[in-house]
Length: 127
Image (cartoon, rainbow, N blue to C red; front, side, top):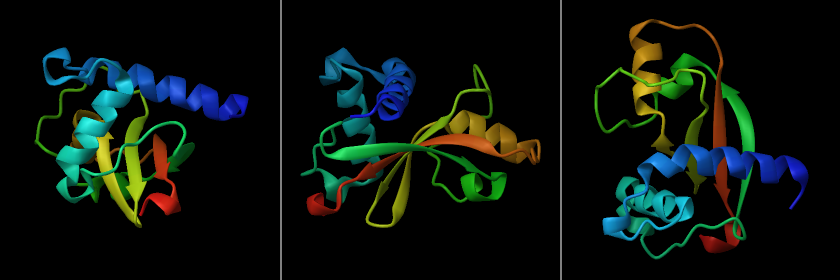
């Protein structure tokens, strides 16, 4: 894994740590990623995402692109707006993992800036 990918995975893990629920078996950030991905896409429960079978890239998305993601709630009270959003791209679809509050606020405020998105790409052989 190159240094850029390593750094992006570290960022993603930092964002996923607050989603860890040890009572549900989320002992590591990757466990939280898998749980949240499976909640967003129950048909993918047989997949186990990891740094070995996924790659990660940093992209910048418009408010309109972010608004197209399914969000679990309407809260718009992010703790911090400068963090990137985390999305999994699997079979040409995007699943929001972290950042719903930020997106809701940006949509509500009609924020025109481009926003950082960490996109976790599921390897084709897993499909």
